Image 1 (cartoon, rainbow, N blue to C red):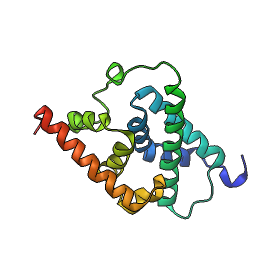
Image 2 (tube, rainbow, N blue to C red):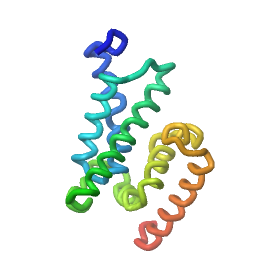
Image 3 (cartoon, helix red, strand yellow):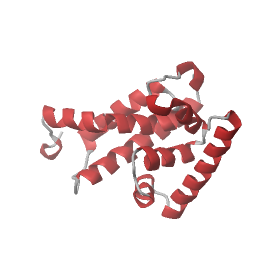
Image 4 (cartoon, rainbow, N blue to C red):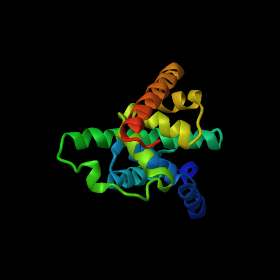
Length: 163
């Protein structure tokens, strides 16, 4: 590890405390698997320790962590698709989003491109422009995915009479 990437144990602990749940939610949205999401969180922090660039500010660091975790999760998903895996019902966990698990479960059933932007926008509070930068798509594509995700979510909620 180079001198610029060395961090004190306390700094790393603060970083993990601050961002691990965010990274877990992003990874879980993509992977739909608690164990793989936990692995993705670990891989993200490992990559941070070994390869993190200089950051302009804390938002830059946060965006970098989100992007890296999304990429790691997508790579894991590609790997998993080529092999046998468990269904999401086999690993469902009520502790993921205890406030409104039914809605979260419906979001998890959406295609990955919708659920990632929905979590970043509604749960994490990012604006469309920030999401576009993080996942490297146009701002218009983010808005379209949010619109389509809301439509799909509404349809699913109405089907299940959860309103």
